[in-house]
Length: 263
Image 1: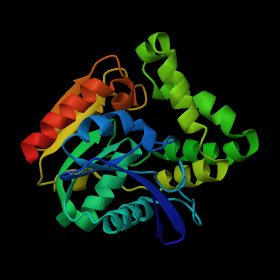
Image 2: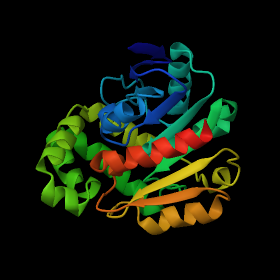
Image 3: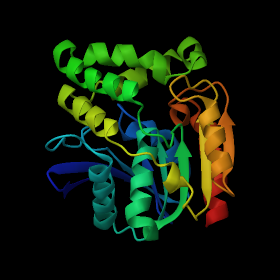
Image 4: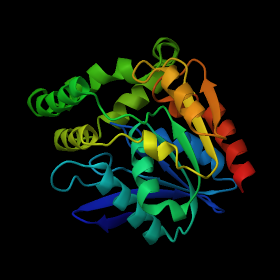
């Protein structure tokens, strides 16, 4: 399914019937990261899986794909799909977007799952590296970018033992274009510090994190848990930054238990 949002067309998939759950995927993949978990949840829930602006089958639009644009895109998808109030989950950039979505549309949020994400904005060095990467992908191509990212995104256990998952992750990331990758990188470089936002979250909150994540250390998830009163923290062992994809059965069971408690 597709819907127009501002200057881009946003693609999304719907699975199952029941209370609404909206799941936002990590960079630089697409909704397929959440597909296995979505299928597990779809026996009781209606699961909406958007492709973020600039990734998967969604359009890029003009300029950086900022968190504000992404949040408005998700609101537009929800409007089109008839979603009033829902449980939302986001991994990595999906979490960054949900902080912005909460700031703008908290009345639409019944509960939150934040996976392998952080509250902080990029450091000056991190921002410079991200902008440099956005420039280089246009020169070196998507293949080179994907191969450089794979070891950072998948846990060492997955890389050693699950060549099938490595191949599927590579195929998802190869759907991205250089223009899309650059736009999303530039948008992430502009994101604000969301630590103050975390303190305002008043709905049930589940924090998931891969025990082998080298991009965002487990300590950051633990700090989020301490800062968010009443939140639940679960570490998924033998999984990296794409934890919900690498260990879909375990992640799905944890999320299903959380959703059932919210419902």
